[in-house]
Length: 406
View 1 (cartoon, one colour):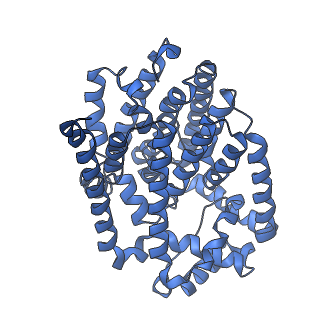
View 2 (tube, rainbow, N blue to C red):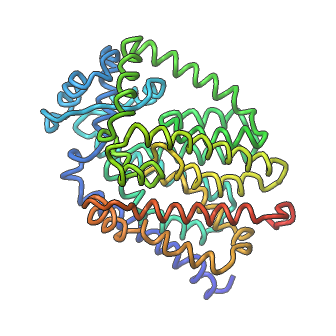
């Protein structure tokens, strides 16, 4: 490689990547004094503390949960706290209480940042990205609103993408037991695990199920020991309340069909939930059909997840902007040389402005100054809808997948 080519393809992308990481780190350090007020980290820490102290059965009782969280973080005293995580996912959070509460937010933020970086490197390895491609991927990732939001409020999204990226890496090597173990972390958000699991099974890749089932049974057994029937009853009551009350999870802000409908018709939570549940299952069925159609292709994984992940997002019942990190494999696949050659220039030009609104500082302006200001139309949903159509078009158009050069 000539010096000029090295500078263009390696040096500048790496410099941009390091600059992006530095900018995001600056944002996190600058927001540290107010991090406790907005972070969901105390939510997870409170769960962990209750499980460790034998108070698991009351983890879904809002007054008890708020009291324990306030004991760990006195600054939160008097604030209502509640959790919506499914019982069988709670054992994953148990180790968090081992970290002292006074340094937890800092440790949690760094941990999530490292998980995100590990996910990026795993995806680069899985899809054979070159150094320059990996650097560009990193640069835009650490300038994305999803990264900013997930780290700022301490959300689980970096752990979920670590789970998915690890599963895809092991699937590429056909190490199915490790795929099952990796996917067990995604049980933290079952609604995001379901379309991924369906795509794998429909594509004839089902050997991960025994390992995942064992992990699931272990988590189910541990959760029952930790919270008992009282805890499960409390969770059922919360789920019934969510069906008729949209305020708790703020799903109207999600870039999904359900989110957009709730913005337009906030008083119709029940009917909208029923309608979008049907849409959600129809979407999962279409993902299954598409994966089944491609199951014999050597490029099955690339084109299935390239189309399925955006489609799963827009049809989901609950998929917030920080969970868009689960679309990272889509961008890793798009950066592969074999796919780049197949994307018409007009489609690339269509995608650029769609991606741009998710990049800082545009994301902050759109989310906080427009969407949260009372807009009835979610620009992120509209962008995701077009993005989904484009990705599906590219994937479906492939008539001769087996002849594409890897």
